[in-house]
Length: 115
Image 1 (cartoon, rainbow, N blue to C red):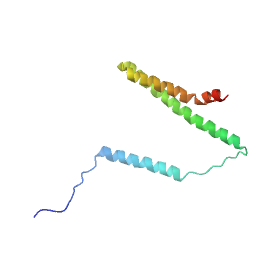
Image 2 (spheres, one colour):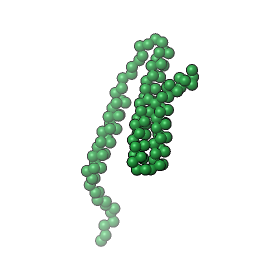
Image 3 (cartoon, one colour):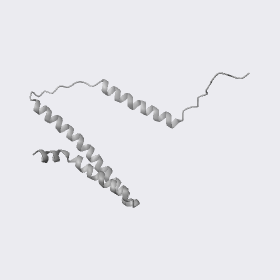
Image 4 (spheres, rainbow, N blue to C red):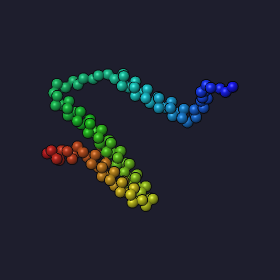
């Protein structure tokens, strides 16, 4: 008589995948806890323009940080392209460099445009 049940024997999970899964779950849990346990903080300023200016300065600071990261990545990419003599990678590196400069100095560019 044949066994008609569909029984599947599960293989054990490799250690690398188990470690990566546990790290991923830990990161997700930390982010979840950070969002659940945040405390609302109200501004002490009575002037709403000051609050908006502070938020604008904070946002432009974040944008500047992203631009600096792009500049660092572009320098590495250009250096690797010069080593491997790859013209397409060199072009991408210079485009990333130009984009990083524009993003880094976006506040100054917008100030020049608006006057």
